Image (cartoon, rainbow, N blue to C red; front, side):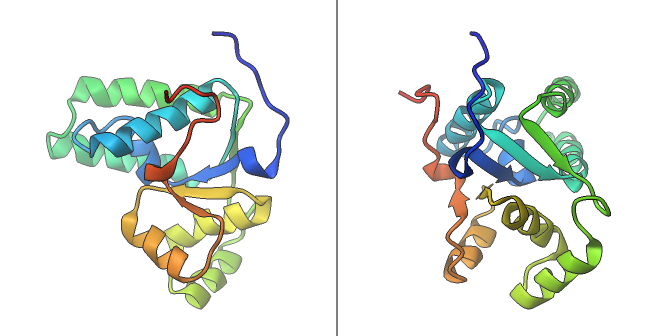
Length: 169
């Protein structure tokens, strides 16, 4: 399939946290969530959406894959395959990495975390989403519930993802 990039709009600018990304690889997660996450991945690969992640995303995904291997949720070969996918994602023109001290500052994120009662790491993703005007997608049910109760209109549950590309029919 030929890659068709869409013009960036607020509707197709997304931040995804590691919980969403790990659904692409951990096959023992709930099927409905994995399917929705795969729809998102297809939209990313086809250039239909632009992804914004903090530089910490890579640490969290790699850490989740290591935990998956240790817990025998995935094999070492599957983890290596997942890392190849991750490396390929980082090369996409519609995959934007936001670096600490360049795109976000620790002090700003700490202030947001303390003001909202979020963990520092969750606040990084929220900070990036707010900074670029992106929708924040998560598979962390506790985080999603907390942000929805806090009246954050830009947080979305991955279980509600609808494909931009029409690939989910």
